[in-house]
Image (cartoon, rainbow, N blue to C red; front, top):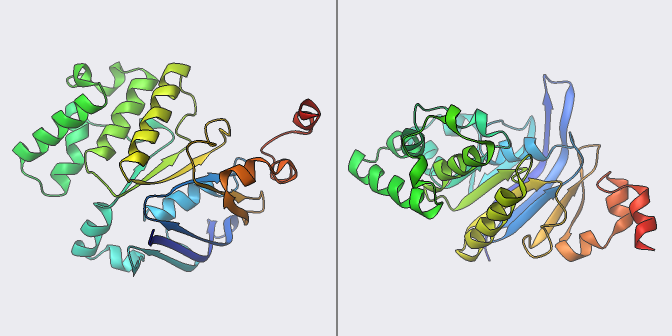
Length: 254
């Protein structure tokens, strides 16, 4: 598998004083599913925003598909279009992503922004509505949807673009058990279809048969482990150190 994303010694601080990333380096290969693990505030979500070109590191480099990504380069229309068409981001809070008057318009928005004609966009929207079993929601307004339905619509608005790389921020957070199960099954299908997936999560239970490897962040905003999923999940001392499990769980294992 060839490398398609690379971060080298990234640093980033909000308002130039609140550190979010401190010397973060990692690479993502085509077709991998990589989980970013760590406690709240460790930098996982910030890294996803860097990978999506929403924020830019204070120092270090981010490369995607063989090219360095910078704010200046993304101002170039051709570069921006090429980059945006290949990476999709599903936010943790669907309310920040779903904003159009109807579900159909929401899903079509990205296609129309990227220059597809209305007929081609309509066909894509119909396909993804059927794929995610939400055809019946097409004419509803976002405020009429449950949390799980909004999550499906947010995912549909990304999948309709058919990106190579999918970024998920805490994908199963605040979802009911049925929607969580559906989403994990969808992630399996996307992985089997050859998509490259990067997900930030606390949910260790779903990782063994989903993620190929885990990148673990410390509460000091640094990468402290990058290893196959089974190896990371078996390292109780590491998980304890980065505040992903608690001391009592050690006793339950004994």
